[in-house]
Amino acid sequence: MIPVLGGRGRIWVGYFDEGIFGNYGWGHPGPAPVGQAGLVCFSAVGEKIWEFPNDAGPAIYDCYALNVSGAEAVIFSYPDFPICRISADFQLTSKRTKLRGCHAFAMSEAEILFSGQYDDPPDVAYIGRLDRDGTILVRRARLLMPDGSGRPPGRLQGRGKRLYHFGKDGVYRAIVD
Image 1: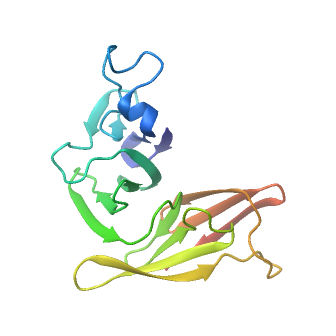
Image 2: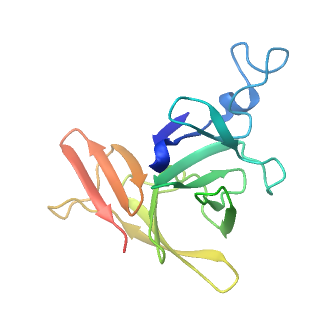
């Protein structure tokens, strides 16, 4: 589960497979998991106000990355790994990618900075731009520390245009313009 507080007092929660399909008493035969849609938006007081529609294209089996900026949310999800933007009024826009397994991203109107894919070293990243067909084209890049060394292991989290690295030596950020 990835909870993120956004604008308008909204709480966005992206769910992993156990929260979607059920586990530990949720789902078959218990009550349906609260996260069965894969992405849920709650009000500031915890009331469910929206969930990812099951007729919106590919279902979410695992929300790999969630980025919230203001009243919008953007997800990167398994199995097809599209980038799907959810507007303030819950309209969906989806773009295809050829990436797999990225756990964080930052985005501007023109670019997206993705973390590495499955089994990539921690300093690998991908920079994406849209093509005419709405597919996100990417090139490989490196995430470097201020001293020029590659990013060491640590947690990455995207928030709007910023990709934060949380490591044992501090917090660093990269900004996408």
